[in-house]
Image 1 (tube, rainbow, N blue to C red):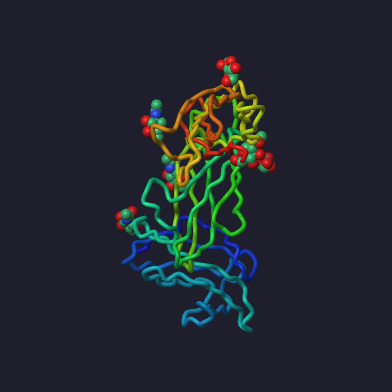
Image 2: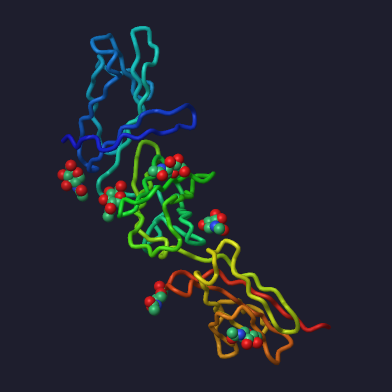
Length: 303
Ligand SMILES: *[C@@H]1O[C@H](CO)[C@@H](O)[C@H](O)[C@H]1NC(C)=O
Ligand SMILES: *[C@@H]1O[C@H](CO)[C@@H](O)[C@H](O)[C@H]1NC(C)=O
Ligand SMILES: *[C@@H]1O[C@H](CO)[C@@H](O)[C@H](O)[C@H]1NC(C)=O
Ligand SMILES: *[C@@H]1O[C@H](CO)[C@@H](O)[C@H](O)[C@H]1NC(C)=O
Ligand SMILES: *[C@@H]1O[C@H](CO)[C@@H](O)[C@H](O)[C@H]1NC(C)=O
Ligand SMILES: *[C@@H]1O[C@H](CO)[C@@H](O)[C@H](O)[C@H]1NC(C)=O
């Protein structure tokens, strides 16, 4: 059954330059015929083909190859003295995403996790490769549902994430649309697409709050340097915990001996205590997005 060629991408191999990529979408058990063309200049010429270096019986400028299961591959066409005229990669994408295996499935929500430290339009997405299949990013598509965007993404060194920026993002305007992100990854000749849909408001997570001791038991809580300005327009709520210095108690610990409060006051005083741990995290006051990671400050009695 012929399923057609859906997207044509360019893929950078690690061993050479840019090769055109042909993507075939099919079902696992189906067999698909795919037409390959060497080039419009080679019509009627004596052209030979190779698959993974092995000569194929058919010849000529246009051939049809049969793709079974996920058997894509690297195809080259040659002139009558054997010179390579074109190199193309045929990747297979199964149209049932339940087959997806290249990225580690987290089980919860999306396999791709995106975060932003502020409302500037810069965001970072990351994922984990399955233990036995470290793949490569072939293509990223990111656009807003409204069509009003200019999003560019670059793949992080190591290939386990991307950093994107929407030049049209306006920090001060209410975000009415969402970003539709698709990451195409490849392992061998198998292509998979992973998607995520979110608004910056959904994925914003402030950096850690800096805690400085002013005097006595009074502390200054500083907005992260990466948080959007002005502070009056992007207020944060602090979640503060004061707890005894006990082995095994970290900032996540909760019990009746932990004093908890929520405040916007950047000055925080701890009364009547000589030894304690002060824990602080922050969240955008105006929306229910992620809390920052905890930061803490320990006050120990002089021995
Ligand atoms: C996969 O593609 C085949 C061939 O085009 C089609 O018949 C089938 O319905 C598709 N399956 C899914 C889950 O999209
Ligand atoms: C989108 O951003 C790129 C990179 O900054 C820039 O070169 C391009 O002109 C922008 N396009 C539009 C339509 O603003
Ligand atoms: C999101 O993008 C993907 C890939 O470009 C596309 O298949 C899908 O239809 C889009 N979804 C929405 C809701 O726009
Ligand atoms: C906003 O956050 C991004 C990372 O998400 C960071 O690169 C950028 O510097 C931050 N902007 C400001 C003004 O700090
Ligand atoms: C903030 O906290 C400090 C010290 O705990 C206190 O003196 C001050 O009155 C508070 N400010 C406001 C606006 O609540
Ligand atoms: C805020 O988000 C948390 C976790 O996602 C959820 O449990 C809580 O109900 C939300 N609160 C409000 C007021 O929407």
